[in-house]
Image (tube, rainbow, N blue to C red; front, side, top):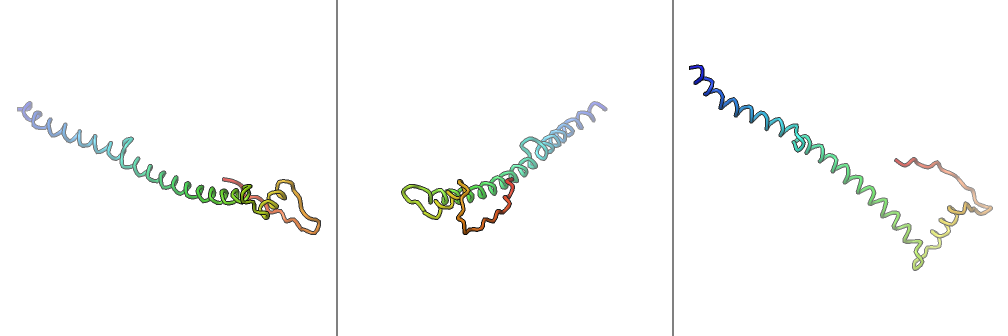
Length: 103
């Protein structure tokens, strides 16, 4: 009688434990819903950083293209020569602005 009751309860109990096990790992496992949300947030952050860096690269490429020998911009050449050599004309006033720290 007790054995029959245990046999009736054992099957559904094992099934409930299996469902609980898989539900726990669905929510908290290595490839769970929480991990998926965390990875999605990292992807969004990385894509925004990529867009920012692509913008910076585009600006730098534009400035570099002005210094190419086949299309040399005299103003850019003068600006770079002054910056590299620390030259200024006697009638010019130099105002130094503090640099922004790179993050």
